[in-house]
Image (tube, protein in one colour):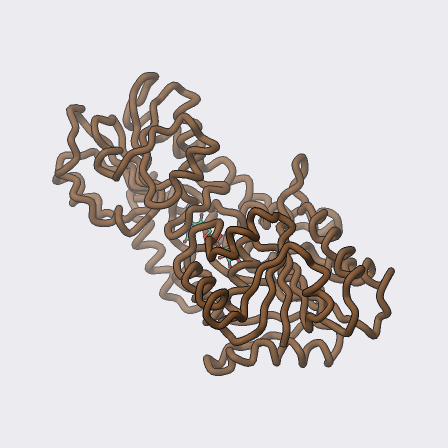
Length: 433
Ligand code: UDX
């Protein structure tokens, strides 16, 4: 089977590299020529554990993977074309911006020469895949292609494992022919007995938004309960454990923290609310999830300022800048948002992150970046552990050089036990405990 993947962002590259690992001849296409040049040298534009090894293997050894900035050649011979371009939020609205999807659909319609499947893997609002079909029908006969929705559920930082061992694969098809081709494509996953869920195109598109929105709901829920725990002397970690052991609830995504960030949850929750509004359906539960998450960063930052008595000219350390560990992605990162608020109030911000400092510095020149966590924590009034990177889990806090009294540690991800930190003489504040 020959595959073409259009868009070499996060989803496109992981998908391309993993399909090559399955043994398929895969061409990844992007109009950004500089990106293609770098990819042809196995250089990945983002940090993701394992991706460069996979690119290198299939680009140079098996030669199953190639990169191109021209759609026409690979589209002509492809059996399946995946659309994996970005669907960011529109500038002034919460709706998904689909302009890249429409551009690609038009380009595909100018280039296919034999029957192929056109698959939307980008996260697109319900109805989009059928609109892609309408666009292509302007140029191509309906017998010469089918459209499919096949959303991804990849988590940054563990995307390759998520692709190779998914909880499920969802395929939204209109007919048996396209379903059979998609089942054949994912046949290598039969070994792990991965459930392949076949639905209508509309259901498949909704599954993606509903899944991300539900996980975001779990997070906002546990964060609200964490606030209550703080008021009544309860411990959110014990509460989450007691809840999560109930199989109907599940323990995942019940970690209280500074709120969800990243390139998916914030944008997908907003876009899903928008879809519901357009269809006059009450999805107000998600508006509450979204509003609470939007306010959480400033509430937490105000708490940090008040509890550690931070004022203009003081210095705080932020450990971790990416929106979660094992990625250099700083999109909608709560750490960066906290840093920005502190900076606006005249508080200096020293910081360290294992891989996200280059990305962070580009857009946030106010950050003073340090060689390691210890240097970042030197002579500050407050330490904020914002992202739960493994290397922050066992810091030798006695090594922190500090002339300030009452050094406060805000462990936003609850990676330490309060008693241990307090014994060392720090003022400790976790989340929800
Ligand atoms: C998410 C989905 O998990 C994935 O299936 C989808 O395809 C893309 O979006 P990702 O954004 O990479 O993946 O990260 P994820 O691990 O889901 O975390 C998202 C945010 O929620 C992060 O900011 C994380 O810190 C936060 N989070 C997660 C919590 O605050 N508590 C939790 O218990 C879990």
